[in-house]
Length: 154
Picture 1: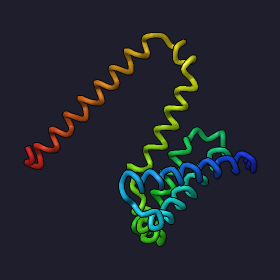
Picture 2: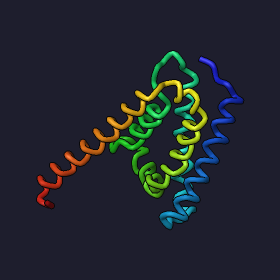
Picture 3: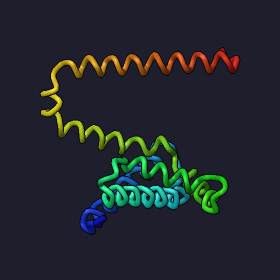
Picture 4: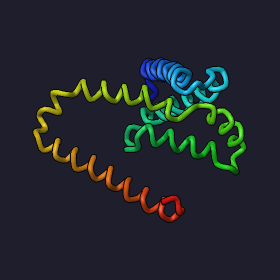
């Protein structure tokens, strides 16, 4: 187990920038006041930082950082945990959809930086991607149809 201070500092800087972008996006897109959402965003940043630190500290564990973050948040929000009330109170102020904008932007930049590698994968990747998109669309539509039918909405 080793902890790289410089890398941890870079993670923290990145997470703070993303947190600020999320708060700005929520203010503009959803009208969410920044001050009530700030404690929740700080909690999200702290959980993300802990998850990245765990991932770096134990590289032999093949467990992604987002899974560590999900596990930490799950544990903190369980009803029998003393942290659940305060955790949920603050994190409920952060609009989930507001978090997706910077995340998707970074994902796009990441893919854009690897465009040469993607070109080497050939046209077969395009076929697989189309099949995945179509399967996801129809799978979602079928599930929605079943659920809405069961609820009597349609």
